[in-house]
Every structure is written in C-alpha cells, then in structure tokens.
Length: 335
Image 1 (cartoon, helix red, strand yellow):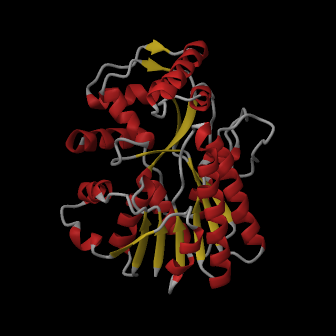
Image 2 (tube, rainbow, N blue to C red):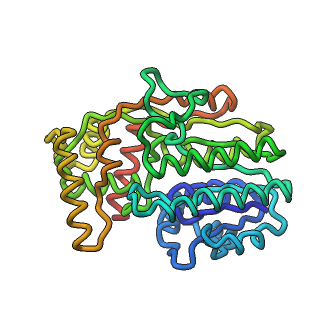
C-alpha cells in the first residue's frame, strides 16, 4: 500500500491522480481534519470526466504532522511513502509552527520508515539549496547558512538534512527539489495564486529570476523515481528559468489581461512590506507581502534540472509557456 501525506495540497492532488490512474496498488492519503477535498476533486475533474472511480481508490485519513503521536498508526501495511505535507509560510510569526510541522514531523516519519523498511520519496525544495550562485544551481550545490534565507527555506533545509541522516542509517529514500511549481487547481494559495492576481489586474513586476516546473511533471517524476531502483539521490525538478516579468506577462497573455507594467524596485517593495506589516497588526490578518518575500522577489536564481533526464530515459519536461497556457485555460473554467 502507498501512503501520501498532504494529499489535498497542489502536489499531493496531482500525485494522487498520477498514482490512481496508473497503479492498481491501494492508496492511503492524509489530510487535516478541517481540510476540504474540493480542490482535489477539481484537479481530478480537469484531467478526466470519469474521475469518481479514481477518487474511490483513495482511503482518506485525518492526520496532523504537529500531532506526532498519531502518525505511527497510519503505517500498517505501507510499503511506500510520498511525503508531500509541509507548512508553507514566509511569515516570521509562524516560525515555531513551521519548524514543528516540517522538521519534527519529517523526523518522526523518517524514524518510522527506517523501522518498518518503507521506501520514502521526500518533497524538499530548491530553497534548501541556496540561491547565491552565478551559474545554474545543481544538486551538488550546498545551502549557505551564512546567507539570509526565509524561515520556510530553513525548515526545508533542516528537513532534508533529517532525510540524509536517515539514509546514513539505512533509510531507502529519494529526494526531489522542485522549483516554483505551476499548475491548475488551488487558485487561492501558493504559486497558483499568481494566476488569480494577474487576472485581477496585477500592475507590478520585479526583475528577479527563478525556476519553474509543471506540477504534472513533479508528480510524474516522483512516481517514476520511486518505482525505479534509484536511491540515495536528490533531483532538482526545474523545466526553465524565467524572470518574474516574463512569467507575469505570459500569464497575462494567456488570460487576455493587461501586462504588468510598473517596475517594483527594492525600495518600493521595502516600503510595501512595512506598510502591510503595520496593517496586519491592526487587522489581525496575515500580510500578502513579508520582508522575506519582498527580498526574494529581487533575487536572480537559475537552476539546472537536467539530472533527472539522465537517470530516467523517458522523462521530459513540459515547456513552461505550455504549462501557463493550459493552466490559464483551466483557470477560466474553474475560477
């Protein structure tokens, strides 16, 4: 049996479609007690009209990575674990919750996998690799602890180190490090929120650069790697590197919306995050822009995702403009 943590998230939803549509193995997936299946169902609907038989293959279990005592009971008859669950936040006020969810939860799962001889596919992040190299970053490039990083990047770096330590102690695992993940579904959170922001008339852009990958390619890569004999390796999943300006303009193009045209300089974003921080203190709502996200919007990072193509002969990335075009088409029907 397969277990997927974080089954209702963007990666988890597409991974569950990949698994249910190509495997006859029983699948168990976790979600928070308060989580809705609506986004996952919309993802499945976008793939196929005949989605209900696929959904029926999934056994849902309520679980929380902050409740470590409840995790071990999930692993009866489990042979493979896809660990997708993580708390994504760039708000410093969430530091303790992020560390408990991402690091302590991962430690507990790694211990269980070692004890029960379960194969692990761990979803890390390009944030665990650092972003200060002039050349495209590859799997051999190490996290630079002396540089400024977001609390999320720190948590993923520490979580990945827990997995590597587990590998030293006999853990059968592979690690994937996706760049910014694009794809349909989950329009009100994560990178998918970019499509809604452009649709709502986003006017600003920065000159930062980052890597991008289609969520369907992430799911396919995770599945193909896990059923292979490959172990004790990590793989950057990155199709292309684009400036934020180019990304926003491509989204605007395929949504038939005006292109962002105002350059948001570091000074402007610096003022913006401070104002939003003060507003959040009054409104008690989390700001959409933080000091960390404002800083990262100006970073110029380039990633090399070719390693997986050398390990898996049949793996190819989708072109990012194709991803954007198809995601925009889905947005128009599901928004």
